[in-house]
Image (tube, rainbow over the protein chains, first blue to last red):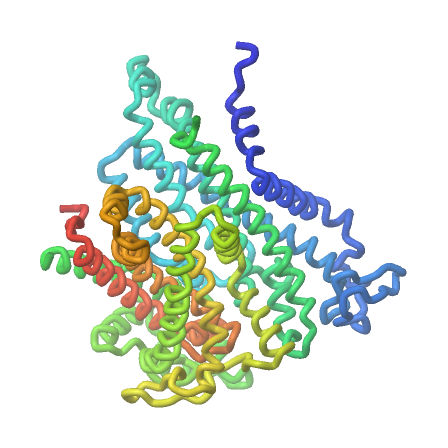
Length: 293
Length: 325
């Protein structure tokens, strides 16, 4: 038993077999670290108005800053260092993406498990709502909700959760439907364990692998959607400038050739989404039991 | 088949009704359009007069009842801002959106299927790998940002293409279109490419997967054993069999292209329904928001139905059965 691989070790070694995926994971690690450490590593606090001077507005990348350093990525219209603004924006984008995914995950998980375990009417109802919702593009549903709810951080999280829950509910239900017919569930039933215990201790852990894959890809989708909505002016408020808002802010200066205000936040967004997608792609292969040797 | 279509239509009406209630109540329950629409200097009597003219003093369910009655007669209310029928405004903008969406879809099809086929036939070649890497990038690039970068390169730096608007339109069967004039093309090509990118990536992946699968099938091996030319094996036997899922996806994705046109239209100031929606949300012009959503839900229901019917026509193995029956 001692030299037997734990599942975690097997997954880790399978994952490391693909250099592109490892690159994605490294990039993702850097992005997350940057977001976490933003206040420590940013050259200035981009939202401390005392540090901003409009005179330094719209400086091109590499301009000297009065503090003695350089604005490596230029400044925006208010003289804000773009590098610092991107670090802080990354924090906000990632937080909104991850929080909304986690909430949607819990809701979708609960509804999907309930549908699979209890079946009947409740299953038909939950799955029918999910089907109808999934037949409309996510952006349309999010737009409807934001038009209805108005703006603000909790509201955009609510919109992202509404858009996402159906994916999880579907994934969990289909996994759980397969698992509940297996013998270990039957055995647990024979032991007269309570339904809650069977669902959470026995069914749930076995439904997790496909869910992790969907959740990874969905975090990227949520971040992209939030950026799009913020760009359209329907997402986060101006006091919480995510990457999408930074890009929107640079839009008006683009035509006069001041590309950097929109360009660099977009690169940060792209790096985030690509790294998550690369990791998600490899996880799908690693966690797929049909591809296991 | 007929029963299926009737069943689906009934279901569609139900979805439409539920959507209309949610949207109407939601849209009318938030904010106060009076604050935006009426001159702040107006006195109380003027305010009340305006509220009464717009019908905003009635209880919500009366407003909805009136709206529903009108909707059945093709009247979705009047825009608060433009004072013209909301449905008319949307239909007026629809050709621009449809032209953009169709152009985008054509770009995605014309490039996506051959590229996907190539990547599927030679999966390990440099070209095949580059196509796949490009498609992953196409999935990850945020559409609105790519639009901005296109404007930066082609309008600002190179000065080749106009950055916004539709340009002069030509009338075709009394519908204004851009694609009949060179100037129109210059306006159309950039937004259409922008909108096409995501679908292009999707079609490449789909065609590649289908090709790789089809190449392993017995009928392809048999066709080769018969000594058919490579072009015939691929053009007739492989291509025909991968077209079924591809056609379905094209149909289904058309709706999503129209939805995503909201973003592209905002970036390129393209005068379509999507831009109208965003402007209306910002101005709290509720009748337009409600009318837009009902129109687009109708479009989706029709598109989904057409795809289902087409699917069964293309593939005789598929039988249309409603899951509840």
